[in-house]
Length: 308
View 1 (cartoon, rainbow, N blue to C red):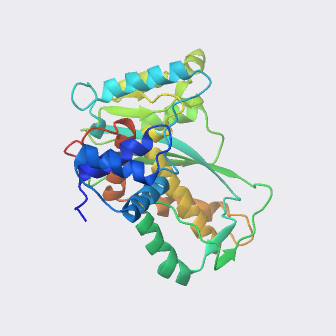
View 2 (cartoon, rainbow, N blue to C red):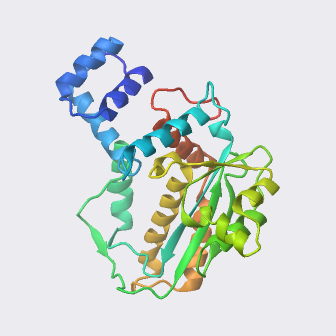
C-alpha cells in the first residue's frame, strides 16, 4: 500500500467537506486521480471515521436565517485574514469569549478511573476526537435547579510562555459594563494587535454604554492599541477560544464526580476548579486550537510558519 501523504489527507478532507455523500470506492477513485495514491477500503473507512469524530464540535455553519448575508460576511472575513493577501495575520490575533457555568454543571455519567485509562483515552486518541462508551459508567445525580451561575471571560493567544493571556471569573450578571471592565483591566503581550470577537450582545453594547456616559467597547480597545476583528455570526468554529472553553467545561464536568456528587457545586469549589482548569491549558493545546480554526477558515491553504 502506498504511503499516505499530507496532500492525500487534505484532498480527502476537501472531498468529505463537499456537500453530498460519496461511497468509499468513489472517494478512492477521486483521491487516486488527484494524488496518484491508491489505498484499500479499510484505510478510507478509518480516515472517514477520524474526520467524522474531529468535526463533531466544529462543523462549519454556512446557513442561518439570511444565508446570503452569512456567506458574504464569511467571505469578507476570509479575505481579511488571508495569509497571502490579507491585512490581519491570524497567528497574531488573540481570541476572546465568555461562557457560563451553572452550579449544577455536572455530567449525567462519568467513567471510572481504570476504564478511563485503559479504554477511553486510547480510543479517543485513535479516533482523533471524542469517544463515548456505555459500559462502566459512574452515575452522577444532576440537580434540577441551579443555586448560582459563574461567568468566565477568557483570552488566549499564540505565546509560548503565556498561552492564557487573561481571564476573569465573575459571579454576578455579565453584560456590557462587565465586558468593558474586562477589556480595560486586561493586559496582553505586545505582539498581539488584533482580537477575534464574536457578535454576542455585551460585545456590541457600545450604544448603551455611551448613553450611560461610559467609553464604548471600540474606544476601550483603541486605548489598548488593539483592533477588533469581528467573527461572522454563526461561525464559532472560526474562534480558537471556543475550543478552550469546551476544554474548561469538560474539566469542570470531570471534577464534578468528586466535588459535586450531590448534583450541586459549592461556589468556592467551582471557582477553584475553574482556575485549576485554566492553569492546565498549554501552548501546544492553544496551537492545536488555532490550527483547527485556521483549517475551518482556509480548508485548502497551508498553515503559517507559527502554526506549522
